[in-house]
Picture 1 (cartoon, rainbow, N blue to C red):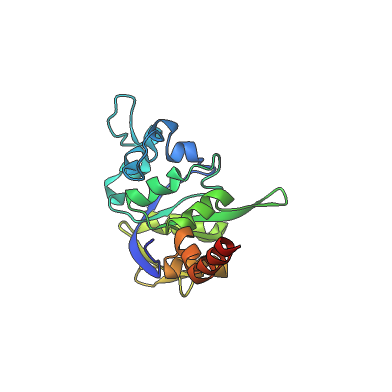
Picture 2: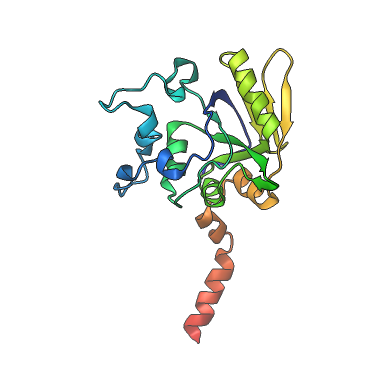
Length: 209
């Protein structure tokens, strides 16, 4: 897995909350036995018209967002089924970071990301950044005001920096173990191999027994 330390890229916004994994990668794209090519199905029902042509009204089809690698959206992103394909599709489309807000509704805190989606993201080197609602709203507004707005997401410093004449930055929290895994590029297999010596010793002891 590719490590993540800092990334600078174009911001694209998707102004929708509660985007579930079936919307991210519809079920008809799950038939492949490979782990590549899922970018073609990303947001398919929104990206394409019934005749298969791109829908010009969909945000990510707009010319100003072509080549974007930082996606900013609304709360509860990645809810629904546990399909890891959703993360594969987002990463293979070119996004390295997804930013979403946690919100307070009726005395309850709704997270920016569904737990399973966030966990799958860590396993695939996709950084999910959770900010306060007013901070994400500020990013939406800045993207509208400054076409082609880029940002740097620095994992070591836990900071998102918007590159304008007067830079604006936002601090984000992240679990220490998640930060460590991303900085080192450790997926589940790599984490297991860190204990290779202990595993080998156990296997030898078990074989003798």
